[in-house]
Amino acid sequence: MESTASKAKQSLIRGYFQQFPMEAALTLDSFPTDKILDYLRRLPLGHAVEVFSRLNPHTASGLIERMEDELFISLFSNIDTHLGARLLSRQEKKAAQEKLALLPGLLSREIQEFLSYQPDSAGYLMDTSVATFYAENTVQDVLERLRKLGDRNITAAFVVNESGNLLGKVPLQLIAISQPGEKMGKLMQPAPGVNAMSSREEVLQIMEKENMLQVPVTDINNHLLGVIRNDTLIDATKQEFTEDLQAMFGAGREERALSKVSFAVRKRLPWLQVNLATAFLASMVVGFFEDTIAKITILAVFLPVVAGQSGNTGSQALAVTMRGLALREIRISQWFKVAKKEILVGFINGVAVAFTTGVIVYFWASSFGIALVIAISMVLSMMIAGFSGAGIPMALKAAGQDPATSSSIILTTVTDICGFLSFLGLATALATALGIT
Image 1 (cartoon, rainbow, N blue to C red):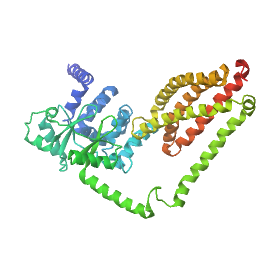
Image 2 (tube, rainbow, N blue to C red):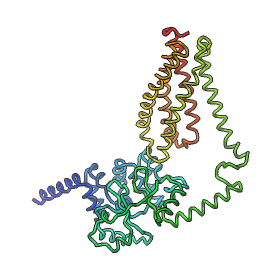
Image 3 (cartoon, helix red, strand yellow):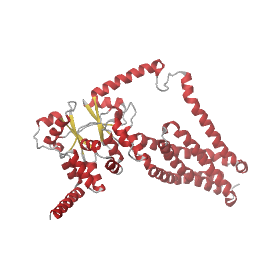
Image 4 (cartoon, rainbow, N blue to C red):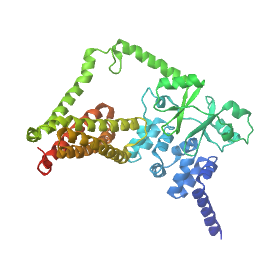
């Protein structure tokens, strides 16, 4: 009888967790860590992930410290990568690295990427140990948790939804004078924040404009990552000022407008040599079709048109992809999705441009064959350029290289070669069939 009752109880609990994961997470937030872990272990993985993803970040962060490796791997292999990064950012650096080492290589690198910020960015300056609450939490819930935290630097409690999106803030003074049963959703005020990739200057501007002591930091999807305190910003600004003074006397980190000539040459010359080599590579491709160009000399006139359009298409795709990588909008594992989108964009734009180009070339060269060849070539080269513009920086990122350093040079080579190859190759192959002379 007891066994039947126990099974029925477990079934009810599982049903509750499955149908109401948010309510279940709110309930578990007040439970001891060991008790929460026990529930997560007993639940089917899918249900455990749903509940764990909705726990208060502070609670979830505490669970990570105590959970066994097997449970950690199971949960983090199935939760959103952004959420995983936000939770691990609350751990000590050494502890976070040890946890990352347990995960598969690609997933570990993606999370590590979200944890890495440039020294001049808001993400680098933020404190990830921020007190977050849900709109359903009462004043009494908040005060109890703040007392446990014992952080005297907290000036406001930030309110997020179940996905971790920033909704607003409630000043500590307002919490102190409100009724215990009042909910945070009714008390919260707007909380202007900054993106994690924003510069130090942008953070300073919003602090001055909004007269804030703490600025919330979010990612591109408005997920709350942490806060920047005014004392941290002041210290960082002092450090930056010192580094700028050193740079003025030749101790700079990178080339500046008044850097030494030798320094500028040392930085630029290697890439100029690489660019020269790639230019000769593209010239070799043209050389393969020397006979075709000798017979149909007008082809040489239209080579820059094909190369130029494919180059611009590739540059557009490269710019969008680089921005996505810089702002953490995309992950390396999404390379196929990004590349597929750019191929489709290249195809649609290619068809439109090919039609215009074909009409112009038909009246210019008085040759339907050449017009058809350049139109087909335009579509092919722009599709390849779109794919390359998205794929090259992501491939370099996956290889652990800085995509900003060499993406453009590689892209220029690929687009020139593909443009020349598609145009001259088609002209050679179809010259007789289309009567091109």
